[in-house]
Length: 175
Image (cartoon, rainbow, N blue to C red; front, top):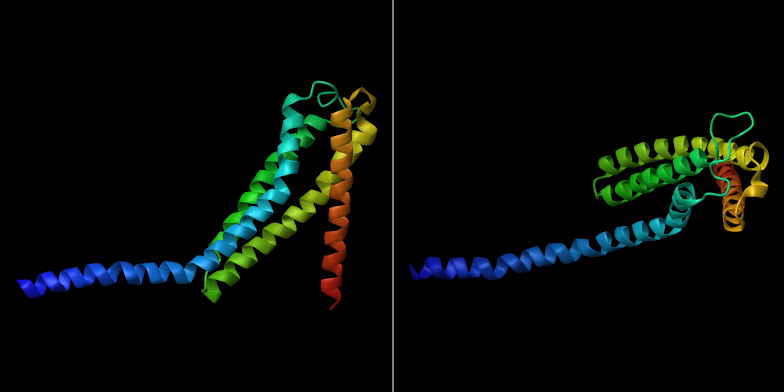
């Protein structure tokens, strides 16, 4: 009876040490994944928040009708904001899903890369649509100063970002 009590007590004492050792070994990897995820979210969230904020709250020009298109600035901002939320979720989930298994990582990276290419193609098209809507389809002189400034800066930053991504991808393809 005394031996079984000692064995149970020894298992209790060594069990948490083994579990704690396992957690400590994987903790830096988890911490790194979390840090990259938080950095990614911090970079993306201002655009997402502002797109949705101006889509929902602006009364000056977001709801102005367009001349030739059936979508307006409101639609552009809403799709841009919610698509940004979805892409952030995809990237963070894929980043957190990476494991030490090479086969699993290949599958995750293949799916993420495919989604990333589709996202890039959609983004190029969508930013061009947003630029056409803002600069030629609506009367942007009716926009509040903050709305005008945000949409203009957002479109320019996104066009520059797309240009950088396309240039970087074309350099990688030449190697």
